[in-house]
Length: 378
Ligand code: MG
Image 1: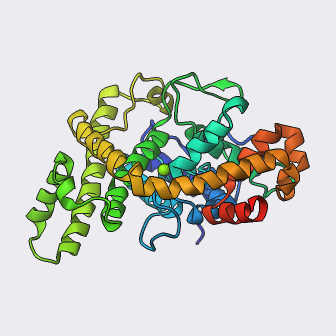
Image 2: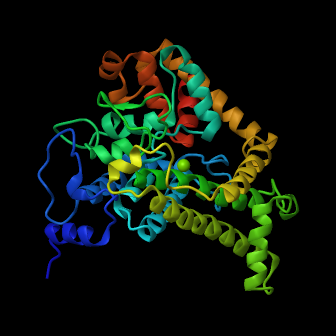
Image 3: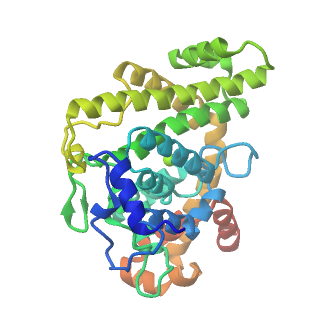
């Protein structure tokens, strides 16, 4: 017995809420393709991302701690996988399209530079007079132009919905293919957004503790951590300090996910959504933390910024790495033939020298950027 595509569509009709994005309602791809016999459009998009080179390179890109400095610390790849898993949980609980939400999550960090946030800032500064650099827009460039897997076109030819979902910030009137986008992302994209935040809150506490940058005593000042400790205590008092700590982080993440699901359900109900479009034209997002709880998450975020992301030890290592990236950029500016393969002449003719360099550098893993520095700048 084979599950046909039509059966999958029928399941979606039965299982998903009316305001979820259904595969049959997709606005399609830029280049027309025949349907696949076994996979829906969003499933194909997910697989295209998983099979892309940019996705595999996430393994060697810094999330917070310089890639390669600890075997248990998150990389962009493990961060991405965690976000995708949390997206599925939230989307499933709310009768929304899991495949679509997961796909957006898997692609959401494809545009990140090597060396984490310091890398992005540096590239944005280098591109100041050439249109700047933003990792969200870069993710779209990756899937639309930079991946080369098909004979007929550049990019992965993803559906409109996945591409649209990668444009997170709508404040300045965002556009895609010349079409003005509604004020809010659709719900599955909102899930990916919140899941991204709560995932890194959780895992950066874990990594920060692991790396010795923060302690449980320091975290004790935060209400949200106190709540997670209480949950742990209510479940167990046994176990080594390490196990209890791991379990507290588990409770922290679970609490945040649970809060998003319950709050979003209420907000969806209150908004009386009848279609996917309705959610995009509201003045607020429906996928959100409960406001009082959100304040607690923001206090945690502030704590992480001060004590982990921009603490001296992380900064110092990342800064040294980023300085190499800057030298590399300038070296390519002087001698573009040092850039390899397809980033050379044709790209420069198409998008200009600086944008070609930014695309090339943004795609690099930490270690490749370091090797390129040795090859070109020493
Ligand atoms: Mg992320």
